[in-house]
Image 1: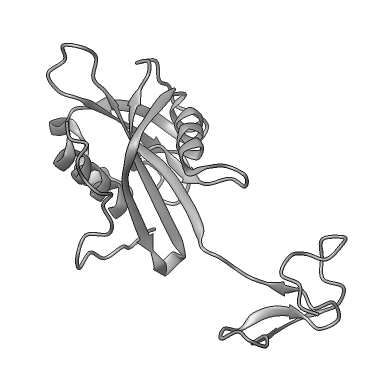
Image 2: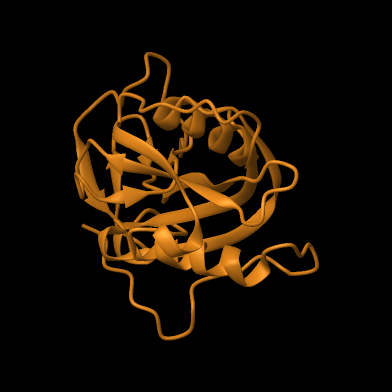
Length: 192
């Protein structure tokens, strides 16, 4: 018997061993007593390039958060984080903006999907609008700010994927006729 979800009680019944299960190609943690196979899957990160542009304003301002948590404490990022169980990526992006910047946002469309295979992450980044200018640092942020393109602290951006998302946002600013972006060609992803 092969089980891919935890057996009753939530844990394997015996010791687990690393082996390649029948019909599989990769080593997995397997309980030989109950047949439970522990599959480790990539983590999904979701977030948004959040824009504040009130009527009549010349340029959009982008919401950035200065990280209060590792990795890359003190560096600037988009409001983003791990997707929770039972949550859509859109709902996760809205929640992360609320948690990190006390911001209420509306999702416009998918901007990009990045693959960070080195750390087994998939990142979904949306374009979104800030529904109110009222923002404040949440528990995971030292501070938050609204930046026009010229004032973004480019030398203090936390991760390559944040830089890509910002650049791709500016490339598509005012447009809705583009497919979602992915990793730029020949780009390296080194994340803290």
